[in-house]
Length: 319
Image (cartoon, rainbow, N blue to C red; front, top):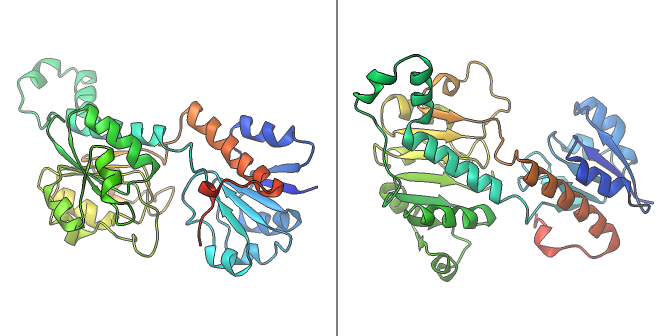
């Protein structure tokens, strides 16, 4: 009977799916310290992983391990080189993590474009009358240009919402054919620099890899319009945080929305935490009951499918 470790608690719907399956034994592990994981994980055949880091030192102890199923789509918290060398399968939630993140991106865009945080605080401070006569840096989304970098599941949900606001949508993704982008009503950009110069809003939906590390740094920000907004809900490290803070302070770009950070949680001295030109959230783009339930079920179902020999090819990560 395969023994499965649920590393970091997930929604109860997923846990119950595994607990109620008589073909599997499972245990929830909430202590994510390296010491505890090294102690606990060697006895398991499979792992579901939400938060926590699984490095080579931990994996070296896991002689029985055959599969890791990620609760999400990113896998920068796993030593994929070790998995590849030891023929350990890596799976992700390929179908359920798209609607909530796309909505979260739109929330950040709307928050910044309409000055919601500023207006909310002003009303609470008794400045209702004075605010009405001030010049506001707000703007309509209609006819604005957005560049979606990464046209996977989230990008495809996002474009529908952007078109609903009558925005012009550019897409940069070297791995997606022009006809696919065309079918969604977007305009495929072959040269990232061209898109960055044209866009009013840049939204990132790409994994953190060697190629995407610091993908958006000062040289790219200087290409953007002064009214440009950067939204990053994918992974910290794709946008260089030091450069972003400088670009905002020097008015090289207008604003940003960040759901992810290079270090999570970010250090208290991270300058972006005090920068009022940034809208922040705690890696929470999937934090809806609907999304968390569906993610937990898909995470567990991937494990079940693996051991039953009917794995969904869309969930497989090619490493």
